[in-house]
Image 1: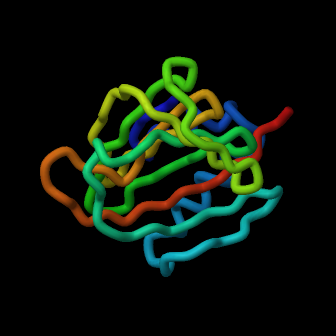
Image 2: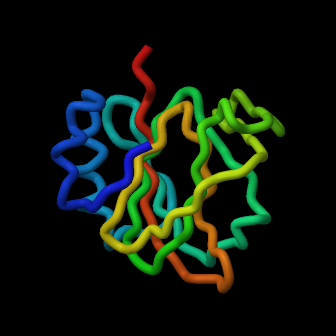
Length: 147
């Protein structure tokens, strides 16, 4: 897992050959409508907007085929993280690349201008809150894993 501010994005370009493409989309995303956007080289992005969910009501998710780059445009969220080796499998949907887990996680506050990168070993809860719901707007870019 990586968590940082958008001003530091260039240091993460070497993590994946298409990381720069993913970050370039973030720069264009602020005024886009919620929905899915196809990018080059098999990347795609989604703009999400809504209210956060109580963090204890969410399971953690992970993905085997994609790296998640999530960027907070406005509002904010709590994000839970744990390594999948420390979690209990709940369900898997190979077609949707969605693997759900239960277990304890560490929660972090994500504010506008912050991003996080989740790799296949990173279980994560996104769009969450501890005490009170909060409105958020974010971008999620899916970057294919190189095998």
